[in-house]
Every structure is written in C-alpha cells, then in structure tokens.
Image 1 (cartoon, rainbow, N blue to C red):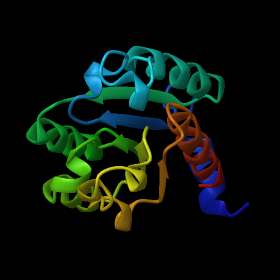
Image 2: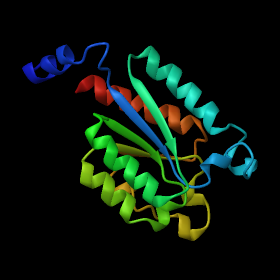
Image 3: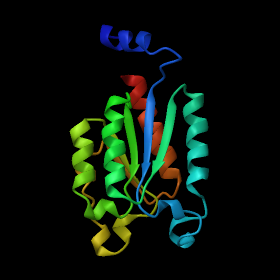
Image 4: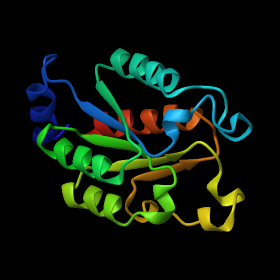
Length: 163
C-alpha cells in the first residue's frame, strides 16, 4: 500500500465515510408506474433502499437525488464538488441523448461517474443509441434493469477501496 493510499485510509474516519451520490434524471420519479414492461415495477425508493443497505454494510454513505430539471441536476453536481462526494452514479434518463450541459458539469467537477440505464438503450429507438455521457464515464451499464444500479455500486465500491 502506498503512503498516499495509507494516508487516505487513515484520514477517513467513521465520521467521515466515503460518499457516493446517485443522480436520477427526468421521469425516473415515475418508476414503478411508467411503462413497467420496460422499466419494471421497482420504485426509486426501492432502488435507493437496496443501494443504501449495501453501501452502509461497506461503510460508505450514499445519497440519492432525482430531478426532472436539467438545471437542478447541474446544481447538484456542482454542489457535490464542495461536499466531498467521491463518486457519482447517474441515470440521466432522456438527458442522455439531449444534454451537453450535464456531462460538461460532470467533467467540470472532475468527480468520476458511472452511467446507468435500466433499459438497453441500444435496443430501443435510434435516437436513444447515443449518450453524451458515455465517453467520459468510468463505466456504462445498461439493459440489466435495476440490477444495473447494484452493479454500478459494486464497481464504485471497488474503486473507492482501491483509492
């Protein structure tokens, strides 16, 4: 273990656990009701509850934020930089295909992020095949339903442990 890794571990007390922010874009507040044949019946609360239990067991703090507003998502990303957020998991929803500003904000704060999609965006309408987020993401998970969030969290936890 290098000194910098050792120092990071020593400086992160139980009061100052690693922090992960999970961002959910537009219409994800409708999970469980909206097109269950595509998105399933789990709600955002269900997703967060499962992620929170896993994160807590690993000694990591996790926060969840959903907005239908591009500006609110950008504001939350920018705030994350001064809050000590170490990693972001984001399901940008339809903003994947339309927003330049949100991925710019993510690059601007230099917080690594995982991109998650519940459905397989590559097996859907042609306009969904391209994501403006993927090129800068640490990883991309799509088409695995809500399990994609769990897999993203596992990948993030492994990266935090290595840091």
